[in-house]
Image (cartoon, rainbow, N blue to C red; front, side):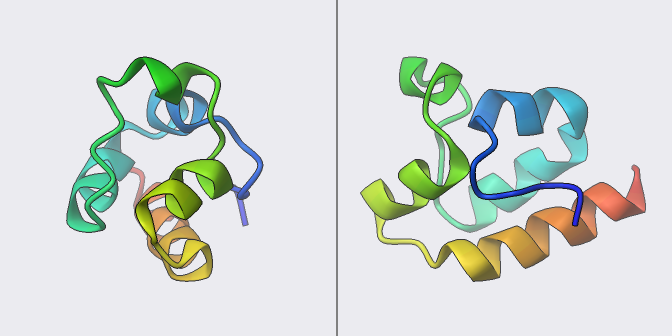
Length: 67
């Protein structure tokens, strides 16, 4: 896995812009939020009631596609 649950949300989006659609699909619209700069993926998922394992799989799939 390239992306881990302890990575900051903005780091994920910066390195793999193609993951933005995954964040949107899961209802994690933190991209423009100030909290995304210091909040990691696990914290963001917990705050929004999202299964971090499922989201990680989707994010890594999107990152692997390298669109």
